[in-house]
Amino acid sequence: DAFMKGFGIWNLKGREKRGFRRYFTKILRSNILLILIPISILGLFWYHMMIQQATQKFYQQKSIALNEIASGIDQRIKNIKLELATEISEKRYSTYTYSGSYNTDLTMISRRLSAMTQKYHLIDSVYFYDRRTGKIYNSKTGQYFFPEFYDTGWIHDIKENSCTIQQLPPRLVFDDESLFDKYSFLYNKRNNLVLSLVLKGKPDFYLVANISMKGLYHDIFDSYHLGNGRGEFFLTALDGTLMEGNSSYLDSKELVLQPYKSSDNQVSYVIRNNRIYFIKPVDFNALAVISYPLGDSYTEAVYLGKYILLVCAGLMLFSLIIS
Image (cartoon, rainbow, N blue to C red):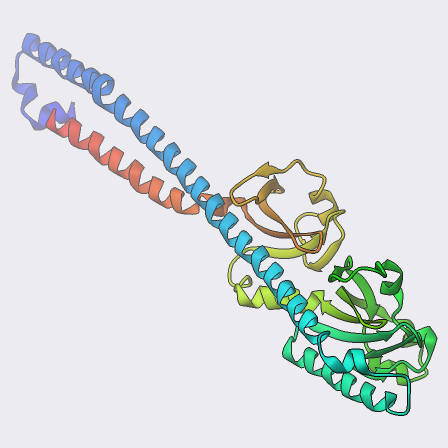
């Protein structure tokens, strides 16, 4: 009525007024059927399509990022393997004898072991193990003077006749070797997780490089700026045992039991607890995992979708005015 009054429709006669109302109602119906409904359907379809594309792009980007992280982990381990193979070719290792100059040779060898740890900050320690004497010399404190304090766990896991680098599963070792010189209950403190690389030399000795899992984790964390966003990065064993990092939103043992879905670059993902977990195997029979809030996968699409809906609403209003 206000619309009709504003345009002087009230001045028309009764029959003309009823005819105009029928005509105006017909225009509205035709606009609803021909313009409003199609535009609404098109807008919703467009919005859904943007959500799907944004989600797919998010999965692709995060898969590529995790693949680069896993490659970075593997490459760091390969570099240390190469250094270990180069180091064992040093003639002094194979020419020393159990004689008066034995200690002098071992002093030089201990210094070389220490130099390796300075060159690669990821190395926790390096061992020189003489199988004939049963003694272990290391890059931190030299010789272990008490057999009960030897780190000998790796000896039982190696293949004696292997001439290639043997990579042992991650294991716990003494955290602070400086405590060996003190009579303390802390002698048995074992809370440092390492990945041991073992290479046999001639005539009968072994070089062992222990890579710190904590150092490797923090190096990757800082190198790829993983603390800048809302992602959560951690390393876990294949059985779900958490190695480094935090899994605050889902227990890592529960995570590995979930059915994985495939993504790009051999990266899998799991959606749980309103988060998406991207999973990639790494060199030492472990999993690199990074998770994000599920809403991050379509955040940009939501903002764009609001503009799409606003355009559709404006187009419908414009169509009504033109009609």
